[in-house]
Length: 227
Ligand code: 6PG
Image (cartoon, rainbow, N blue to C red; front, side, top):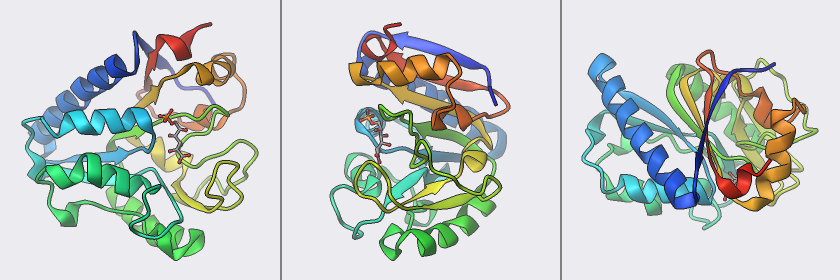
């Protein structure tokens, strides 16, 4: 399956973060003006973290934001390697989004229970307004890894044997991540070149399974984009 894509090439990771920050704020304003809320799915990774730090300085209507996670590592609640811990530290602890509007994945329960619990959250949230995603150097996105087989129709997946530690994770499915008004990929660093080229030439990588109706926006730096 292919979806059309808009590629935005920026000089470096800082410029990628700034461009994504602008995009998020514009989309949030628009969504809130039209329907009174903005449902945003967060990603892990170093480039999203830069965006989150920028967002803490924004003058946004935080009371209308709803926060979800695309994936989580099955680690204790306060473990430093959890995406939720990074997002809280860099962003959520510093803005006035009501706690009841932040939907953390209960990944500490293990993949199966967490995926079941988060299914209901995703089912009630869909469609999302915006999904943020990174990409690993093997072409994985969220916790959807090459070679892993999941039931496509599910909204969430229990993930075992992740090639990247920790091995146990929970992820929103490609189908549910694609059910979003906008999907933004944030891709930086020279180690992403092979996967980016594979994606562009039609290799069947997990990133290529994210196919929202409106296409995707890929924010990428020059290092990752060298063809
Ligand atoms: C994970 C990471 C991972 C990350 C990519 C890109 O849980 O394994 O969160 O999915 O998003 O590896 O990371 P960078 O933005 O740091 O390049």
